[in-house]
Image 1 (tube, rainbow, N blue to C red):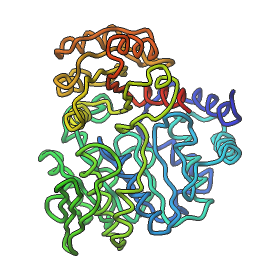
Image 2: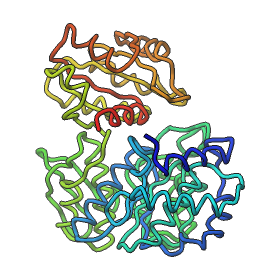
Image 3: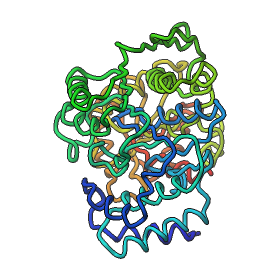
Length: 423
C-alpha cells in the first residue's frame, strides 16, 4: 500500500530525466531556497570510498551511540523502505515527518530540474538540521567531489574507505581518477581518516590533502589493525586495543572497523566506544544470515545468506568469507545490474561454489537478464542455471541438496527485494 511519502517520491522521480547527473549547482539552488540547512547540522563526519563506507558508517554510529550520544545518519541506497536512508538521533525518520520534509522540498524546488538523489538529500539535511543530535554521519552516494552530500563547508572529520574500480562511466577509467573523485570530500584544515589504498589511489589522496592543508590519519602509517587469534587488535600512537571481532562477517570488516576506530580515537572517544563500534554494529545485506521468512519456510534445512556487494573487490572479499565458513555445498542465487563488472565479481568466487542460479532482478530496469548472468558465470568456470525467480531457484537447489548453503548475492537491489519479502 502506498504511503504519503511514496507518492511524493514518485513525483520527484519525474523532475529530472537522468538518474545520475554529477553537478552541485541544483543542490546549492535548492539548499538556498530552504535556508541552507547544511550549515546548521550537528558536527559532521563525511564518508566516501568504493567499498566499506556503509559498514564503516554503521560501526561509527554504534560507537558514538555506545558512548551515549545521539547520532544522525544518511545512507543510500535503501533496501526495503526509503526511510532507511534517514536516521534522526538514532531512529529511522517517521512517515509523517518524511512526508512533511519531502513536501517542503518539492514546494521549494518550484518545479525546477533536479535529480531524485539531490532533492531527497536536501530533505535529509533539512530534517537533520531541525532535529537535535550530537553528530551527523553522511555517506556519499557516488564519488565525492560533486556528490550531493558534499555541501558541508567544515565537517568535523572526513573518512575515505578503500577505493577500487567501480562506476567508471561516472568517475573515471582508472583507480587514480576514481580516487580523485572520492578525495573531493577532503576540506581545508579538516583531518581525514584514510583506509589502506592502492598505491595510485594513495598518491592522489595524499596530494589532495597536502593542497588543502588537511592532516591524513592513514592506515599503515598512523594506525594499524589486524586479526589475531580471532580478535581485533588496533594500534595507534595513543596505544593498543584488544577487542572482540566485528559483529559483521568477513575479514574485510576488520579493516572497516579500523577506520571507524581511528575516527573515534581522533575525536577523543575511549575504549568503551571502540568496543561498541565492533560489537553493537548492525548493517543488513552485508553477508547477513537470514533467520526467518518465506524462503526459509520453503527450505527449512538450508542455510541462507544475503550479500549486496557487486564489484570485483566485493567478489574478492566474499570469496574470502566463503572460504572461512564451515564446509558445506554452497550455491549462489545471483542477480546483477548491467553497469557492473560481472566477470571481475565472479572470478574470485567461482572456486567456492557448487553452482549458480541466475535471476533477473524484479522491478529493476537496469537488471542483467538471467541468461546473461548465467553465461558470465559459465565463463568464470561455474556450473550455471537460469531461474524464473528466487523461489524457483531455491526449489531447484534444494530438490537435490536440501542442506545446501544458499547465498543470494550480486546487487543491493536484489537484497532489498529479499528483505522486503521477509519483513
